[in-house]
Length: 106
Image 1 (cartoon, rainbow, N blue to C red):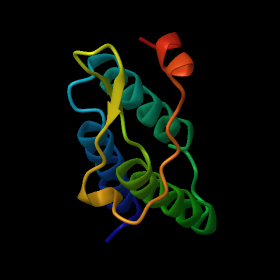
Image 2: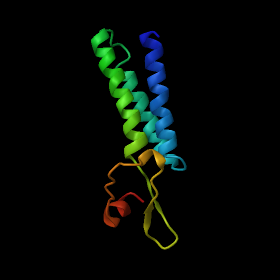
Image 3: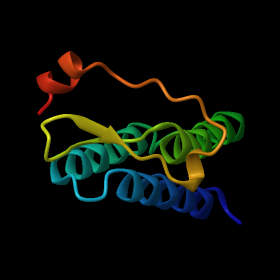
């Protein structure tokens, strides 16, 4: 696999992770896709094999982190927030933000 195809594969993996993690949240989907694209564009002209390898590893780690360490809280009908971790989050320690912090972003 060439570095270009590895980069494209890593890019797609990070986007898939964000789409799954932020499903139903249009703002986060749009913003995370823009941020992922920006990061990859910033490094488009990197040619050093060592630097490319490092960047690809970062992308793999980002995809893994997004998939397993981020869970969105959703506003429930009682006015509180609920977090429903999926099977990808098994064994992870979750840090639940306070209601005060969540209200800043709703």
